[in-house]
Every structure is written in C-alpha cells, then in structure tokens.
Image: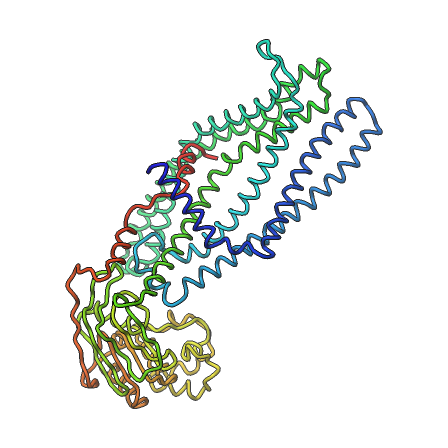
Length: 601
C-alpha cells in the first residue's frame, strides 16, 4: 500500500472515530476533560517541584545546615500532600470520563444496531463485523478507556519532556569535548540513551513478538478444542469416545509448551536488558557529572537533581515504545467498533432507498396486505424472487409454498425486515398485524410477559392467559405464569410454536403472517392450531408462507413460488458494494504493526 493510501486510510480511521464518539465531549464532559488536563499539568508541576526540592535538600545536607534541612522536610510534606490529592483527583476524574464515554457510546451503538431489524440485516452482509456482542461489550470499553489513558499519559510525558529538557539543559552547563565547549551534553546523552534503548529493545523483541503471537494461536486452538468437546458431549458419551478425546486434548495442549518456552526465553532476554537499562538511567548522569562535582563546579544537590531529570527525560522519550502494544490493541478495538457501525449504517442506508428501484413500504392502516410488482433480492443484490403481485383481504386464508429460499424472503418482506428488492409492499399498522417465524421471540422473564409480548403481561388477567394456553394444548404451563426463565431454551420447538398461536389468540390481530410457523408440529396439531385461529378470529386474514405439514384444504387460496434465475443482478449499487466489501481491507496505523514487530515491551 502506498504512503498516500495509508495516510488516507489513517485519516479516515480517526475521522470515523471522532464522528461516532466525538459528540460526547460537549457540555460538562468537555469541562471535565479540561479539568483532567489541568490535573496533569499539576502532576507535572509537582514532579518539577520535587526535583527542585531534591537539589535544595542535598545542598542543605552538603552544607550540614540543620535549619535548611528541616525547612526542606516541611516543604516535602506539602509536596507529598499535593501529590496525593492531585493523583487521587486525576484518578477519579479520569475514571468518571472513561465510564461516561463508554456508557454514551454503548447506548449510541446499541440504539443504532438494535433498531428496525438492522442487527439482523447487518449479519447478512459481508464484512468484518461478526460477534457484535464482543464489539459492544469489550471493544467499546477498550476504545474509550485506553483512549483516555493514552491521551492523558501522552500529555503528561510531553509536558514532562519539555520541562525536564530545560532543567537538564541548565544543569548540563558547558563541557569541553574534542577541544570545543559544548552546551547541554546531558540532553544529548538522554536522547542518545533512549534511542539506544529503543534499538536494543527492537532487536531483542522480535523473537518475543513472534513467540507471543504463536502462543496466542495455540491457546485459541486449545480453547476451541475444549468448546468442541463440550458441544459434542452426547455423541462422545454414546460412542464411548472419551479416551480418544482425552488424548486429542492433551496433544493440543502440548503444542503450547514450545511457544511457552520461546516466550519465556524472549522475556528473560528483554527483562535482563530492561533491568540494566532502568538502573543505569539513574546512575549514568551522576557518573558523567561526578568530575564537575569533584572539581567544585557542581553542587551535590544539582548532581542528584540532574540524575532525576535525566530519568524523567528518558522515561518521557520511551512513551512510544512503552505504549506500542497498548496502541495496537486500542487501534484494533476501535476498528472493530467502526466496522460494526459501518455495517449498521450500510443496511440503514439500503433500507432507506426510495423510488422505482427500491422496496417501498406503505405502513399505513389499510384494509389489506400485499405486494405489487415485487422483486426480492438476496443481500448481495442478486435476484431471488421476480415480479410478484399478491393481495390478501380480511378473512382470506392464503398458503404460499414453493422454493424455500424464495418463500423465506417473501415472509421477511411481509414482516418488514427485508430491505433488498424493489416494488410496493402494503402493510397494516403494527398494532393490527402479527408475524411469526419458526421460533417466536420469547423475552427473558416471567412466562406471562413472554406470552403477552409485545404487550405487558399485567394488561391481561390470568383467566385469559390460562384459556389461551389451554386452547393450544399447553395447559401444563398455566401454573408457571410467574416463573422467570429463558423460555426460548426451556420450551421445545413444538411448544414454542403452540405458544405462538396462544399469543395470537390473546392479542387478536386482524392480519397474521406465518413463516414456517407450524413445521415443528405433527400434521394433526398443525391443522388444529390453524382451525383454532380461524374459529376464534373469523375476520382475520392469515397468510402462511413456507412448509405446512397439515392439510392445504384449510386455505381458500394457494400460491407456488419459483426462485429467480441464479446470478441475475437486481440491485447493481448493492452488488458493487458487496464486491468491494470482500476485498482485503488495509489496516490503519500500519506503522504500529511494523514497529511492534520489533518491540516486545
């Protein structure tokens, strides 16, 4: 990738991150951010004051002045109290901003994702936006918390560098090198020392990074093997396959051993260097300044002060190296959040299309349900169903069968969750219509809430709930109306479909759209459920799309669907967008990856 393309992608990365998260920093959040910056300034000021105090203390000790030494002890108490107060306030303000930003961004992303079926539609388009749960729960946390940590520490190190370079320059004085008087030799030494440390860390870190990546891969393979064994528990037990699985798991675990040894050796090498690097940083400027001290041109206090200032400068210069891994992890999490947001915005944009080349939904309160000149496309823009016109009047009972994929697409169109296609779709108001697929949505909580959804369970008295359950053959659940559970897991597939019909009886809609909603029932039960709805709601329109194991004689109209020819592009703009999404995506801030390849810190 060219430098221009890399720069453009990096700019887009930051622009998109600011677009989705920047609006948080208004009002009191902006004031709190300014307060955090002022606290960082106070922290640096206290570090500078401590450095000056060190010089004054050792100068007093050098003169053996008890009075001045006692004065410095009193000053130190104030510096210590100020440091405690400032660091505590910085921690509280920083954490308040971190969680507040995370809460705001989480609410915003969930609000966009869990809206108008975008969470469902986004899963159907290509792109790196899988596992939205991890992106929302973990990546948003990292993106917000680490961003503030990095910004705060970078600001701190920048102030530290500017301040202590000046102090170190003034303490350096003039040194005679090769017959020339050179100013600021300790500053040059600090920059050279930090550069040398970075170079050696780069050399020592390369094997460590590779070993760490290998170990993470082996650990992931071991976790996958454990998950696979857990999910296949029954087949393994039936086949008495435990010895084979036990041997396989042991073998997979042993692959971690070599990468663990390689990582340990890399850590040992880097630890040996880092230990010496840190210790030498505190002593080197003192050794360099000792001749001036012995010559009487540098006081003991200034000698010790120069050592502290040298350490502060080298620590500030080491910020990029020390934070490479953190920046790489932050970048990856931000990109994962942006990719999910991009997928949600993409399907929202496609659902908002209007005109002759779009699927136009008329959601007015009408007396009919149907489609006119409807073409349905797959999520990639290719045609699935072509030129369909269907009108359903009150009291109609319509069975739509034929190609399973075409039938599923038509059900999703009538359910209002499929935006890909063109034509007119007339839908009644949501309050007058109910749609069920093979598995109804059963919210966690009490059974009465799952039964009466989307209305509150408290709006229906127990006799009505009991009667609905009894009518569909679920009398055994009447005693469990107040039991809280994940009913989607507790009930069998047949019980869930019966519960769907109980909900229909309870809510009494005028329009009923069913997609494979009886396929888990035996033929007699499937017919019994439909007869129940027809008897209870004689004016309601019923359209069942897909498989029905019972008799087709219950329907007064039947329609057979055929899938459109494979490969025909119906939505050219959508098709082009999908092809682009399949191309390899360049990573922003790729320089971080290149640098991290050489640093194990």
